[in-house]
Each structure stands twice: as C-alpha cells, then as structure tokens.
Length: 218
Image (cartoon, rainbow, N blue to C red; front, side, top):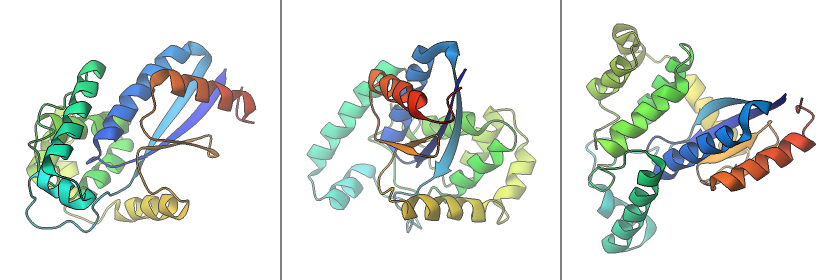
C-alpha cells in the first residue's frame, strides 16, 4: 500500500481551489486502491483584511489585478466552464460579493473534529460559488452545518467564541512562512509542493513519482 499525506492550502473564496480539489478527486480515483490518500485542509486568506459589507466580485477583482471588468468576466466564465465539466456548481461565480472567510476556516477546523472537514469545505464552495451567498454570515454558515447533519447549536457556540482562531492563524503563518503565496497549494508527504489546480493526469503522475521516492511509500 502506498500512503500519501496530502495537505491542501486553500481559501474558500478561491475558485481554483474548488477546481483543484475536484481534479485531485479524479486523480485519487485513477490511482485506485493501491494508494491510501489522507487529505487535510489548511487555511489561507486571499483577502485577510476584508471587513464590512462586500462588493461585487468583478469590479473588486478588476481593481485588485489591474485588469478590466470584461477581462475578469472572461476569466470567470472560463472557470465556470471548467467547473461544469467537473460536476461542481459555479452558477453564481460572477454574481457573488467579496467577503471575509476567517470564520468559515474556523468552521472547517471544527468540522474536522467530526470527520467532516472535506464535506464542510465543499459545502462552503457550493454556497459561495454555486449560490452566491455570503460565507461570512452566521446564518449562512449554520445552514452549511445543518446541511451536513452536524450539531447547529454546537457550531453556533463555536462561532460565537474564539475557538479554532489559533489553529487558523497557525496555518496561515506556517504556510506563508514556508513560501506559499498563492493557492491552491498541495504539499505531499510534508516534502513535495504541487502548485495550482493541475489536471488529473498531471496529478496522477506527480503522486506516483512522489510515492516511489518518498520514505512514506508503503
């Protein structure tokens, strides 16, 4: 058995992170039962200083990257087509608003304690990119919890507290300190970095090569 530890550094507000994980899922399926992949998610904030009311995503991105809104719309449309082929919902990608994702990251940490880390991450992607809802809003976050069948009142208490704040901050400090400046970033077996939302076949080859070289390979 070949064992692979896959640490994913990502933000809920990053469309390529959702695409990257969907491609990773395809790659893991292609690797088959000879490989045991343990996936762990880690926090990264693309817009850590965001507070207050959000703004429409297209002008916000245009300003951030020094491009026109039409250019940003074309890029988002391309991502929507890629997502559709992967079976993930990006219907509201161009209609969403900017928002703070810190509490959403805390919720992912909490969900990990209940074995639902990946499911929570995917629910947040669906809520933000598919439904265009504000993933900094308490009621929206709790609806994700309810949708996964987790304890809503427990989650409410977590979000009303500072629980998991240190864990999220530690993630951000660790991976930024290690040189991760863009997401998604996949760290394999605590040693090898794969940057960006690579195609499934590219990931399969990389994971096979890493498994063959890594001391963790079975």
